[in-house]
Image (cartoon, rainbow, N blue to C red; front, side):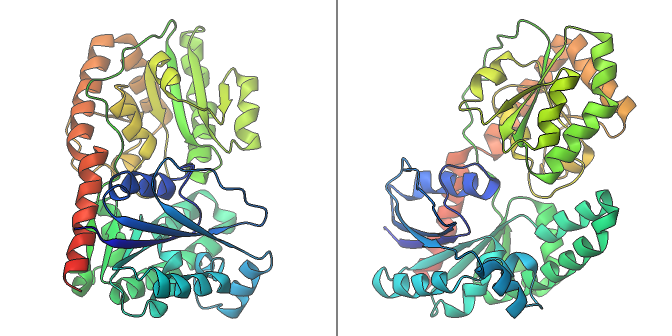
Length: 390
């Protein structure tokens, strides 16, 4: 039976450039044709919407330039991320949507939007945390010691906030078990409320055919996101020169959104930087090995999933692998230090049969656990159960 679903988001879901945008657009690909969906989003001044290819009603609330600072100053006991999103106009828009749209279930995307929980007038509510931002901040503190006190302080406040939010909500979701454990913090009374709904992606029936004319490494992602930037710069400094010395014809393509100045500067080292690619498929077809040197961050490494889905063998870190629940042996190469990374990447480049076997195993696992249709259906069942029990 169709359900009226209200989603409240910190930014529009389309185009899906960030993790939570991609997650929500994936959910909506199943939900929108089957239910009545309204999405209310915060937008910056001067925002111009990009039409989404989904039958979804969208409403936008403009954040006034001074409101993020005001939100932080008036609520100093809350995490910075929450204060930044305390826009009174959003509360007014929410109240209007509750009165006119009359949602049967409300979904708050990310816990930073959960300051709205006391104003939902009893509507069943799911908070999709996606991942544990507190865990993310703790990892970041290890790599930025000069800012470590700020990151540790924010991590502690986020931990307290997330558990408070979970206690108030009807249900919460995350993408991986490590994030569930981080948010719960050992509080057994909250365990029934928080479940893992994996990150869903489109998975081809068969891996892409390779068209590489030269051995090519590929790294994709949000090139303005700290864990991605930090990992790429580390690989460029400690691993790339040695690999290129071994094979001067080796290419390394780095493609993604929001490339930072330091990422663009890697062109001087022979790295091919592709900013804002419209379509990653040709780059994936031309690649030989995907490298994801992620030493920080939380949640599920989405670009690792996507590389596996399209049939690329992947090398990543043990930290990133912790976000891949239930991944079987033989589907992922892991390395931590420069020597290990060199050996792992060179080994796959030198042994095509081994690389192909790893890619096939990984593709089968992604198809079984992260295929978008089945993940979106799992989320739909959660929403329908809350609506039925109202």
